[in-house]
Length: 169
Image (cartoon, rainbow, N blue to C red; front, side, top):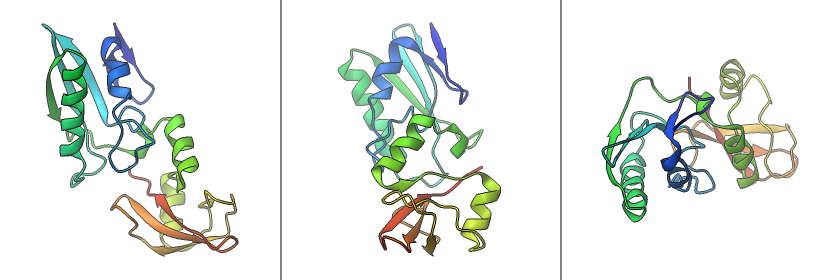
């Protein structure tokens, strides 16, 4: 049986639990399923066929993710083929609500909608909520954070710096 997730993923139910246990190497509180990186996972003749999409085309974590997927499937008794799929490109719309909540709990502000993101990254709006104190009295320090998919912000109330996960469409 295939599980169809709201983000368009198709994952064989026998593989779902295995893949949902594989963490994103850059954000270990999220699974690659919650991130929307796993686009398709099927079983054919005892071989797990997995399609993964990078969060952006130069994402250095994809090699690690591919190896982690192979290892998890091998440990569960499956042979596997992991294929990198670039189209359609990954979007932050593919993050599950669980992923967005986990990001905030982990100290990373989740992505806003595309138009709001442009205003925030352009310095016109203060919409990014501080994951520490929940204030929206925040400012961008740098459009580049700990990874290319994040920007660095600071809360002007609690003074804590934090990453904001940029909206990608």
